[in-house]
Every structure is written in C-alpha cells, then in structure tokens.
Length: 119
Image 1 (cartoon, rainbow, N blue to C red):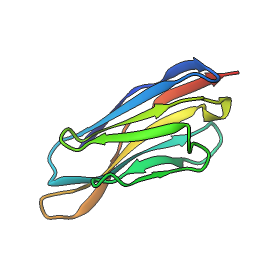
Image 2: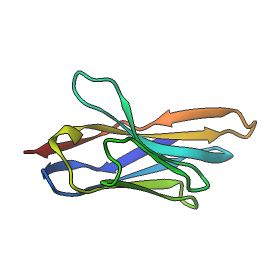
Image 3: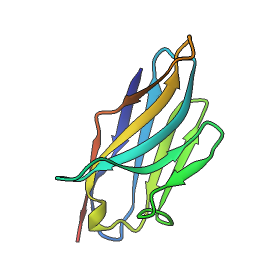
C-alpha cells in the first residue's frame, strides 16, 4: 500500500493551504485516514482524522481552522488549512489504516510534506 501526499509549501501567517493524500495498492478497504505532523524537536502529533463513515476528529489546536474531507471512492483525503499560524510549521504526514484481503488491519505512512508558516 502506498500513501502519497501533495501540497504544502511556504505561506504567511493568516494564509491558507491545502494538503492532499491518496492511498493506493492492494487492500480490501481503507478504514480511517488522517494527518499527523511533526515539528523540529517535537514528537509526531495528530492533526485530524476521518473514518470511512465520515466521522472526523481534530486536535484542539486546529479546531475551527482546519477541515479534513474524504473521497471514499478514490481513497483520498484533503486537509484545508485556514488562518495558519507559525506554530503550524511542521512536516505533515498522511496515514491510512487499511484491511488486507484476510481482513488483517495495518497502516501505512506517506513520506511527508513540509508546511512553513512565516510570521
């Protein structure tokens, strides 16, 4: 299973960016997908997740500013980020939780995409 991110870049504080992620390969289904981020010197943390039924979960620090959406037919998710702050600067990683054809659950990570917010 491959997870590929796109988007990211440099933006000024208060600006917006959109990240996209696609999961592909051989699997029975993709359950939850989500975004995590890791700033320099810090641990990786959850940003937002969405299940196959559309249930979303957000970190408190991004609630009201970030919106996660999902296209189940294409196993893709997007993260729309508004009112970005310098503290949002981090490498953003996409994660997909999937089931293989034996219904065993695994997860796959993307390579990450960098988001830099200047003050």
